Length: 431
Ligand SMILES: [Mn+2]
Image 1: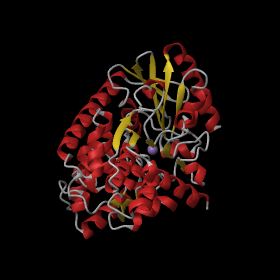
Image 2: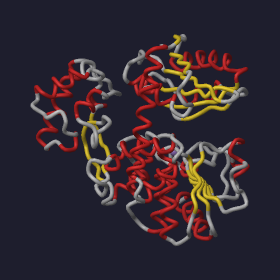
Image 3: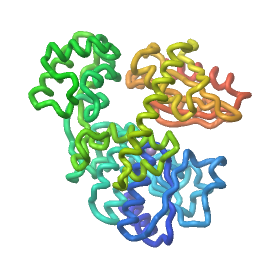
Image 4: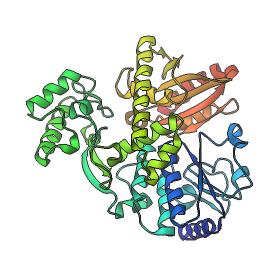
């Protein structure tokens, strides 16, 4: 009931808005959501504008035309004092319940693991224009924000359509665009000893199965795919890998071109992230709304990959400082927007010991951008990076995020205290 009432109130409000401006976050979920709302309002001939921003705080406050009719997506709940009279579609922890805020938590949904802003945006879109191809991006945003798979509850609404196909298979990255040899080499979480990060072993493994290594997972015949799945699981089981985490449900966008990142929801989310993190969020919005910007986005993805691999080189050369409960990596060259991804790769590819979380620091103006990453295994042991970041930055900085990936900003003077606090918090979480 709360859900229906809230939905109808927000939808009615959106219809009334003149000359609306959509303000969205620049990550995959933010761009998916922003694109969904934009395209929906385009369809209604409301001619919206979109303004993607890195975050909503003092540093961006002055950029926002507060006298216009604003629709915030994937942000806004944390600043009710600013967004109170505007529409907000968000899944981050709310502080208040203003009338036009459509927030997962107020609707009885666990916003951090069960739905993304893109999922909520799609529900609003469906109410306004019915089911549409925007079901695809709805799932893409969910993958970007690591919503729990199989999707459930309201997150399943896009799955009712022909624009999203639910399939079962290996949960590793690159099923649509990477040669299988590469997909296996980069397979992590769960990590497979003897396959992950072992290039020549991957070739041998495929050769033994008589599977052409340059084919993609999706281009294998059904028989080949079954053969590969079975053999890989058997191999991994012998080496103590939690094999139930290797296979699972994932989502394909069948209307998208074969061989493009846009066909696999996970790969699409990486493509969007590349746009946002390399200062071309409008390209990401264009992908979602169906403009002809794929080649441009691909270029950004290539730059993204190059910078990540340079970041990994720096981490390998410099190494990490070992704290009691975590690895500390202080980067000199990696962009603040990429350092978290590099930290995540280091952990999942076991370049650093996977039994401790990693905290990475990158210099940002008057302070430090902090990124923390964990693994699913660490979550099982009680680690929650998001809560740790929030607690450690209390009174000295700003921090928060998801259980497995989170960040903070801490001024120079306080970074030591912050890092010491993290040690105490992680110890408490696992005791
Ligand atoms: Mn989000």
